[in-house]
Image (cartoon, rainbow, N blue to C red; front, side, top):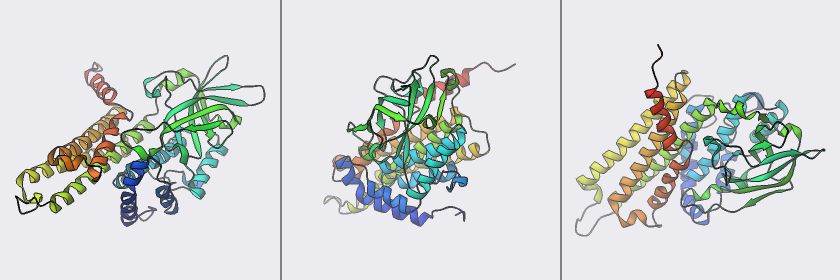
Length: 383
């Protein structure tokens, strides 16, 4: 382990085991595992991508993917909240567009207090901004201050966040689109508990409503003409692809480990020995391990190419698609093989299955990733 890393494999393993012991209860309640977040805070793991000039560790995607992939084996909902913390702090630093005082504010709060933030982008009518469109969450100036009105759905971590980075449009003669930093304890902010999903239930991805929320001018951190947003931030997309791939790969690895323990423990009366002795389960585990080996190779190769400046956004998005589909298929194989016990809420495999299916909802969805790769392959060769 690199001597500068602020964590060890033992620390990550201990946290993962602790989170796994709590995961079923939080899945049933649908509440955010705030004690998991407290443990991460105490371990100093909430500021890994904050710039070093602001007291953070400024780690790269290789380390972030390692942490998220490990934590996800314990509780992927906690890992997703942590993922967004890492990705947003990295994106802020890479953009170079935030006022330095505001950047320092959110950075030092993460370092000293473990304060959490996340982007708030999706809307009831707009859907995901990754597919285009103008946000209906609007900023206007009332002659004295800027005011924010609108709502955001699927706001991961909602009740645990200090700030939201809202995707907004301005009501101006020449409208702008971009980001506004919103303190989520500000007057006029309320959270509606609308997250009742099948999987990833403990992410607290509720609806956040803004009702005439006053914002200081320096919290309008990155507003641009709409055409300036047609040039996507490839670094942010790449980071998201890696981290989401690593997270759901972690879910599949947890499912694989539970399956192995089940096959050793289950001794049918008519067999007189554990299911683990049967050749059909040997083949099953070989197939699952092959899928997960492919994921490890895909992620490692992609990170190597990214660090060498040779990875395209198209390839990064394909990696996200392939690793998450491999993870889903691995868990599906386990579920199909053992029947009723796989779908019992008394067993973790049922929860792992519901959670891993959520991989498909994350940007980029399969059609976007595959179509972009196909267009690139079929594009005329330069002469």
